[in-house]
Length: 190
Length: 190
DNA sequence: TATTAATTATACCAATCGGTATATAGTTAT
DNA sequence: ATAACTATATACCGATTGGTATAATTAATA
Image (cartoon, rainbow over all chains, first blue to last red; front, side, top):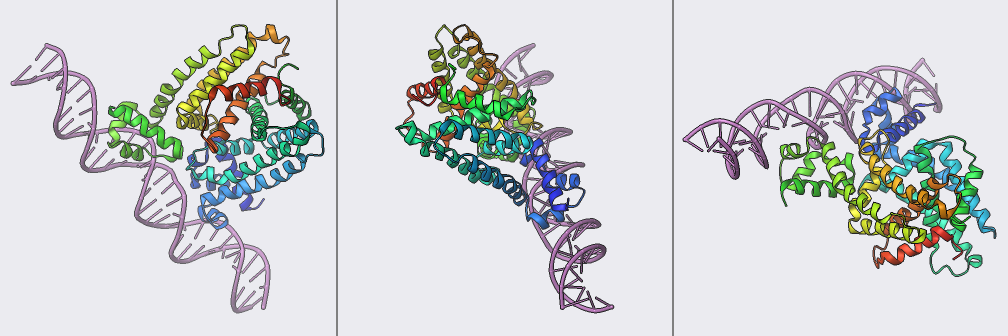
């Protein structure tokens, strides 16, 4: 692993543990075993480092999500694939998932929010698109596509939030996904 | 408004705008029109100031939520009251709601997370209790009370998140709550 | 081998960080 | 009147902040 990668990894871990603003550049380079000019050579600034972290995480994420969320006529299976893919991505790299999540809810004027916002918008668009494409089968949704998308993502991410807070075991993403999608589609009387 | 209150208000606004770690003590007292020793006189530390903000926000919040979430034999109406109360609280003080939310997802080792965690646990307990109390009517939930609670909170808070991101208008909490509860209970085919 | 370009380190910058020692008003109780 | 207490300001602390000018080192190229 070269120095650039090492910096990305160490910074990600520290950001996850303490938060972007609570981590100093000095701390990052110390953990990575080098000095500050190296970091500034590769990333220009602390914010540039953050952007690189987010890009290398979200670009593959979004590609996978787009594939999974492609509507092919069957709503349950589309939602299931979408849900499962998000669960898998989160469980493959819990630290990065949680860090990205924290940025999503960071203060509006904070750099971190500006950095992560475009990715969040794209995720939202992908999910909304599912319900748009499925509108033929779901019937008139009265413009509730956004509400459905928010609800769908809410159920998934709140499940993950609680999951990371507690057990972190027996992770059959397939089974969990089935469960969550069922809850989302048919409610609690199932 | 005395100096103590003024400090609480200015700090809350700044924390909401920039985030706890990105705001300096100097900045807070300047906005409040006083000097640092005054802040340290009332709150002992920056962290103590945060604790005071959270306590004065969450204690009434939790009391209201507890009342609303009291199960009296009717699941839909209990969920509706609970949902509506959370919407009302969020809309009464959007900045504080969003700031509290950001803390909820802040880094695990960050002071802010430690400060807000007990309140989040209590909110979760209140909501889980609904589904425990309702288990007689809902039948065997196979220990899915927590999943239901997470899903319920996820739908509400994700709705709010999107709401604060966009329109922020025509807020009939009663109607929205009916909608969200219906989606939660009966899914999307309604 | 000489030269150029890509990396990395030493040593520094002004500014800000959270926090405090001390002094000074204003108020209250004796 | 004076002692004690509450509340606020001046001026400072060492440590750390993000960032950089400069030089040395390494690797690739001519």
